[in-house]
Length: 254
Image (cartoon, rainbow, N blue to C red; front, side, top):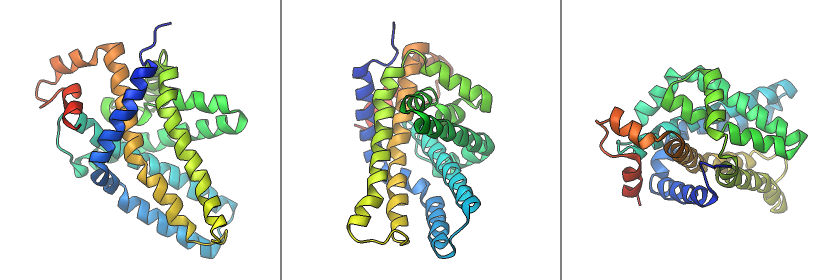
């Protein structure tokens, strides 16, 4: 069966994402700094008033929605960088605001499916992670609505599941494992379970990996489109005003 993202190429995508996210880490990180700081303050305050179950559920929804919005802003900037355009944080957030509800609900749906799959059995969670890998990228680059975005991501993923899991899946698991270990390490260091000191460590780690995860998602999306849909040719014919082609722009950041 033909694959559009061979294992070798998937690993190359990881390397490219590392290079890009390292070079532009601070500009990308700053895209979500204010939202993450605001959420950290709210979560920090919650340690003093002990919210009920519905309050904790609401905080969880806010977190996943906020994370999705920040991820979308990073995706928009990475897409521009890979096409030789300048980094423009204001323009990126404007595009996110214009697609606010689509990004928000898509983030909730994707996360709920992945978490439900992980709770039931690990395999279904990984399946949902793979088929919806391109959700934020499709929204920000193709401008589709919610239903069309989910179908489009699934269509792109089919035929490339192994490569997506090897790249995005492995990266996701590493992020989750570290997030799982952080509170346990703090416990071993003597930090009380209900201490608000735990908040910046946990939120900080998840915020710090957004640039890499966004760069990887866009890079994998672009590679699949190039191999499956001849995106380079489409881009050359339809976007002659771009300063650089994706492959040339990628080479320029090395």
